[in-house]
Image 1 (cartoon, rainbow, N blue to C red):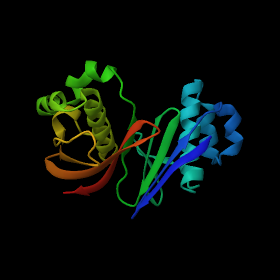
Image 2 (cartoon, rainbow, N blue to C red):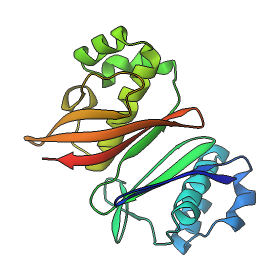
Image 3 (tube, rainbow, N blue to C red):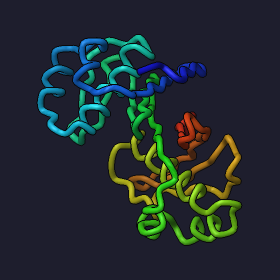
Length: 208
């Protein structure tokens, strides 16, 4: 395994870890809190174990953060001193910390997104995807952007109607989203880039 990318942008810290070995072999190489160990022992599928270890490696080694991972009632992870987000799309996993908000997503262009596109995308977004240079990449970025935004708020958001991504080009590094939650509107600025051939979308700024 190896740290492949580390990003520090103001208060935002983000690290990506590439996992190539078996999870059980790597456990001794990654710092685990007692809660980490207990959580790991409850995992029985190899894929989930690998995702867990790679995500913890990104946090513990990549970001040099050994604080306990805490969970809100809805399952959203956080640290005692900051907001935190994790994502994985093996063999890559990542961890992000920010003082006030944290949300990002890793995704490869999956043909399944065509099948579920009407569930997560607004009609205007689907029209923009059709006009883009690569419909599947556009849908992938839409999905990742909405996942990243959802991770910031944690609940009470419907992807297709409450999170609207403004039209963009595939190679744009900056995306904008308009979000409506509990009667309040937000403008979200996101960044988009690739790591090891996978799309990554990160929430950079949240404005009410």
